[in-house]
Each structure stands twice: as C-alpha cells, then as structure tokens.
Length: 273
Length: 358
Ligand SMILES: Nc1ncnc2c1ncn2[C@@H]1O[C@H](COP(=O)(O)OP(=O)(O)O)[C@@H](O)[C@H]1O
Ligand SMILES: [Mg+2]
Image 1 (tube, rainbow over the protein chains, first blue to last red):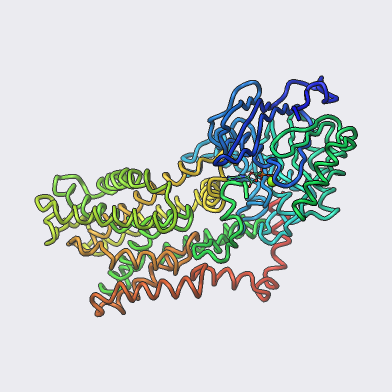
Image 2 (cartoon, rainbow over the protein chains, first blue to last red; image 1 turned 180 degrees about the vertical axis):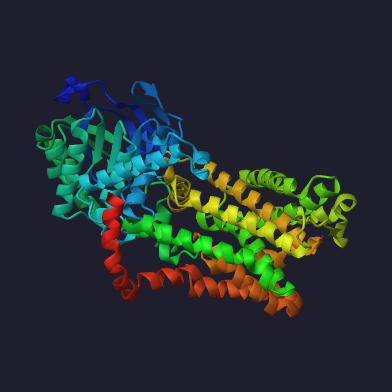
C-alpha cells in the first residue's frame, strides 16, 4: 500500500503550484500512529479528502492549521514550511478552517460572528478603536459590509442580526464557513461542512462556495462523507485510510477503485455506524 | 475526538455560570444604530443627573453614591477579565489595593493626585500582566487558586512593608480637592468623571472588534487561533486592562475613605466584587453599575455580621448564579425580548432598518 503518485493522478495538475503541500507527514498520539507518510498537494480549486471515520482526516487539518505538530514531514504553504508555527500565525498567513461541530459565539449575531474572522484585515489597531478614530470606523464599516455580503452569498442574508444560537445547526455551519471566508483565505479547510445539513442547506453551501471561489485562486480542501457533493465540487479527491493516502485522482476514477470501495464498506461495517 | 478543545465543545453554554447573556446590542442588529443613539441619550441624561447629586443629596447618600461608582469602575475591570475574557482571576481586590496605597504613597512624595491615577493604573496593569503570565495557561479552579494566592501575597506585602504602608495599622490618605469645591463633592466629581470616561471607553471597545475578539477567546478557547487570534495574548491583555482599571478605582477608593488598611482588601472585598460581576451580569456592559449598586446595599445590610459577611456574600453569589445566570441586566433583555415590547417596537424597527441600510 504505497501512496499513489498524486501529481500524475490529479487531472488538472497544470492548474498551478500547490497552495499547500503535505510532505511525508507522520503523526502519532502516544504510539498510536494516526498519519503515516501522508503526502498531499492541494492546488487552487476544490480538493476532496475522504475516508472512513477515524482515518485521520481531521488530524490532517489540525496539522496544516498548526494545532498539531507532526512527528515527521513538512507542511509547505506557498512553498514555505509552516511546521512549528502556531495556529494564529498560520491563520494570519491566509489559512482558514471550519470545525466538524460549529464553534460560534452563541449570543452574538450572525454578522458579528462572521466578523470575528476578519482579524488580519483591520488596518487600525485596538487603540484606534478605543479612541474612536475614523480609521477604525472605516475598518468596521467595510468589514461589516463584507460580512453581510458573505451571508447573502450563502442565502443567509435575511437575518443578519439574529443570534447565532437561534439558527438551525445547518445554518450555523454555513455561518462558520462565511466566517472563514472573511479572512480571505488562500487555503480554506472545511471539515465535513455538509454533515447535518438538509438538501436546501447543501445547495446554499455549494452555491456560496463556488461563487466565492470563482474569481479567486484559493485552494479549498474539503473533508466530506457526502460523495455526491465531492463529485459535484472537486476535480481532485484523495482517500485516506488508516492514516495513509491509498488513492487519489479524479472522483469518477477514485470512487470506482475496488480498493477504495473495500476500504469504505469494510470500515463502515467494522465501525458499526 | 480529535479536535483540540473538543471536550468543551459539547458542553452546552447555558450550563456555564459566566455565560454572557446580555449582549443586547449585538443581537438586535438591524436597529443597532438607533438603539445605540437612544442609549447614548439616556447615558447623557443620567450623567447630568449624577453631576447634580452633590447639590441635592445629604452627605451620607453622596458617600454611598460615590462608593457605588468606585465599585462600578472596579467591577468594570473585573467584568472585563471574568465576564468577557472568561478568566476567573482573583487578584482583583489586591490590585485595587495597589491603587489605593500607590496613590496615597505617591501623593506623600508630592505627586499630584490626578497624576497618580494613571501611574497606579500602569503599575497595577504591569503587575497584573506578571500575574497573568502563569495564569493564562490555567483554567477554572487552578486559575482561581493561583491568582487568589498571588492576590493574598500582595496584601501580605502591604502589611509587611510597614515603613511605606504603615503595616496593618493603615495609612492616611491626603484628600485632593478641586479648587473652590468642598471635599466630599470634589471627590465625588472626580470619581464621576473617571467613571464616565472609563465606562465610555471600555464600552466602545467591547461593542467592537476588541469585545468580539475577547468573546471568541472565551467561547472558542484555543480554537480562536483559527481566526488569527492568539488566545494567550488576549488573555494577557485582559489581565493587564483589568489590573489597570482596578487600580484606578482603588485610587478613588482611597480618596473616598481617606484612610486605608490591608484588611479592607481581603475576602470581605473580593467576594462582594464577584457578587457585583455576577449579579450585574458577567459579560454585559452596564452590569458593573447595577451590580455595584446592589452590592453597596448588601454591604450596608451585612455590615453588622462581622466575620460572617464573606459567607453571606458567598451565599448571595451562589444564589445569584443559580437563579439568574445572566445577572440583573439579563432581566432587561428578557423584558425587551418579550412579546409585548416586541409588538410595541415592531412599528419602529422597519423604518429604522431602512434608515440603517441607506
Ligand atoms: N488529540 C488526539 N489525541 C489522541 N488521539 C487522537 C487525537 N486526535 C485524533 N486522534 C485519533 O486519531 C484517529 C483519527 O482521528 P481523526 O483525524 O479525527 O479521524 P477522522 O477525522 O478521519 O474521522 C482517531 O483514532 C482518533 O482517536
Ligand atoms: Mg473528523
């Protein structure tokens, strides 16, 4: 089970240099090896990361976004190693993510929650806010406008002032995506964004994401169990199984691969869910 | 299982006693500007009324009002730390003492009182940052115990440094008066001016980006890193600011009491300070004022209880958290969100919304 050569398997490898590149990542927790020699280039556009529960997908995101430091291997963002950087430093380099269970500030409005993603785009500091300088007010107005626009892009523009906790869980997940986008990321990491979403919400999500990505060079790495969504969005997909990349390429090919089918079904039976 | 901090993700926020329920402004966004303007007007009128107080109140009531404002400022800082950044740091009474003592001692050295206010603020802010360095990596019980111990150590130091502080016996405070105004009215005006500025500035940063960032740190913990926010940095900033504000309030307290001694800054102050934060509403904007007023009344009621005072406050604190997790200000929010008020306001919001959009 050696990892496939992903660069030849990815159909549009001509689409540009990888935005982020996992190179030989090994990650273990107290002797339990969770990622084993994971090499994965993520190019501009959508890339899917699939695999059974416990395969190590979320761990991959945690490594990229700086929450975990790998035992071995390198993470290169735009060619530069970011291993050892802390999560907030990596976020400020233009890496945004969402979480498997949405993490919003419950009593703050949708817009305010989205605004918390704007950190690196404030030109003025906290002191200019404290003293109410015009620069601070301009920042606030500009970013608030962008936050509202993003909510509209995702079809949530109707209740920008409603407290986050009063939205259904599906909408909360979408608000979290909008928050990630306000960072104007060059790399967006989505952890099962469609899990728990109704068909209508999935459509909002897909439309919003494709609209957003259309005029940008950003790379989006999506972990998702909804294979139809992966096929719809991602020209490239990689399959993680017991911490190894067992296959990657165009979804149509990958999802037909007997090894992948076996991994998915086998694991699901074994896990009993 | 694999997300850092996932364990806290599953706890529902309503179980959390420090839960912020009073972010009233933020929730009603479409009319936020209009609401803000009304509130601004209310604040200005209230301020004018407060400035008139020395002319209408007897000296006892003026003292009580002055004390309420001093506590309100102290609680403003405490609430920033506890309610907004979510850290139960318990050195606040000691930092308040630093302000009272520092100001009095600096005045003995010839520093004008008004200059001592920012000076003690900076000193206590710096000290709070030092306390914060170990504390920001701790949470809950351990954070509380560590900061409590440091706070008690500070008060012990005040007792020990007899040559400068007068030790357990206390220290006289030279009273500053504005030219042409009698002592207690002058002290009151200074307190009111400082309180107004403090509330204005703190509120402005809390309703904006700074407040959002603190809440992100509070609710997301280290996951706020994914928003480009260093949780540790903001926790430290919260410590520094709360220390600064505590000492500013302490300097005003010294002026009001005219005599300070270490026992003033022990549990009999710290526990009421917690009462002020939680009864007012942790994480609210005006809670500190309401909490302080409540606590001053309690202090009057409990004053004859002696050593039982701290226990009595503790009971009040527990009852307050259990019965009213959002504090007294949440009652206003509940009232505002109620159907009757909603219907009364319904006609207005439509026009306000178009106004805001325009
Ligand atoms: N912080 C951690 N400590 C210990 N074990 C972990 C940690 N994070 C993940 N794991 C383990 O790593 C494995 C992969 O988890 P995860 O990356 O969440 O899988 P997936 O997202 O593919 O379902 C699981 O067995 C999980 O228990
Ligand atoms: Mg996962």
